[in-house]
Image (cartoon, rainbow, N blue to C red):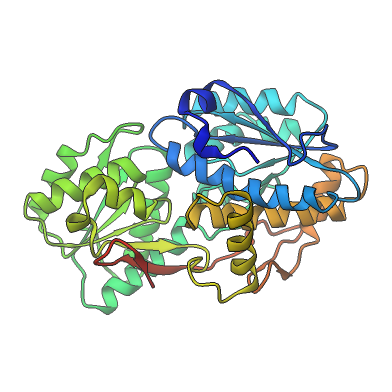
Amino acid sequence: MKSWTSLGTKTLGALALCIAATGAAADIVVGQVAPLSGVLASTGRQMVLGGQIYFDHVNSRGGINGQKVKVLVADDGYKVDETVRLTKEMLAKPEVVALFGFAGTANIGKLLADKVLEEGGAPLVAPYTGGEPLRSPYNPWIFHVRAGYADEAEHMVQQLTTLGMKRIAVMYQDDGFGKAGLAGVESAMARRNLKLVTTAGYERNTDKVDEAVKKIKAADPQAIIMISINKPTAAFVKQYRESGGGAQLLNISVVDPAELVKLAGLKNAHGLGISQVVPYPYMANLPAIREYQDLLRKYAPNEPVNYTSFEEFLGAKVLVEALRRAGPAPTRAKVIKALESLANFDLGGITVSFAPDNRIGSKYVEVTVIGSTGKLLK
């Protein structure tokens, strides 16, 4: 496999990458649109990597029903219009039987609003988002492997209030993603007859958080929940801590702790809580984690264990099983039916469950903390 570390951002951004473990023509085609450039580039890279190592593994063992899997990857730069354009291009190819691992609540929400998924008729498996508008009201096209932002918000608010922290603020990305997370926190607070002391947004695709830092610091909260991605999260943490802010900081699951430590500095990032929607991948105590670690060492030996790549690895396992059940000539409709048949499906000590009337495969949530050495601790 060609190492992702050898591919520059310009290459990733300019090309639609065609991935097949053997280099031979693939029989089953899957489309993936991911943010391989821009503010979410490091996350997008891990998303692609996590699926890739499993698809490579499957192809090395003869593929699915004797057919190899080929993944077409395109870079949307986390830009909504690009997500729509590239998805339409992929769905115009009749050989594409499923979509995999997109990112962004606003990006995928636009696909729903514009009926791109409905008109294309292909399932989208394991999107890297927990936005409630993508889950409710029910839509038949998206199969979620992760818990929603509302589930994460409930877990974080429950933990904070149990510790006696009731003065809570939210820093959020001012788009569909951030507003979905904010709504989840507000609902969790309302269930406890509480209100947020303040909220502060920042502009999407920037790390301009100066005003958010000032507003939240002035409100003097006991805890701050951040609904934000790597760069703006790191900028907020750094500025808030260096201005003397002492509140407990937590972030929703879509951040990379290593990136936060690198950008914000260990002194500032130490103690930051991060909610997670898949089990702790650094300890090989489940068959799925052992398999993930083994395949990471085999196909991407220079890549570290990472929550994002592990989540998309699990998503790839879900998709591969659906492709297997869809039979030797899978179609978009057959893959959807196959996904619906995955009731209590064991990925290796981790269970997901779908049905004709259910697209939420898991509600698993736990909170981790960046420790004194920069490592993520349970």
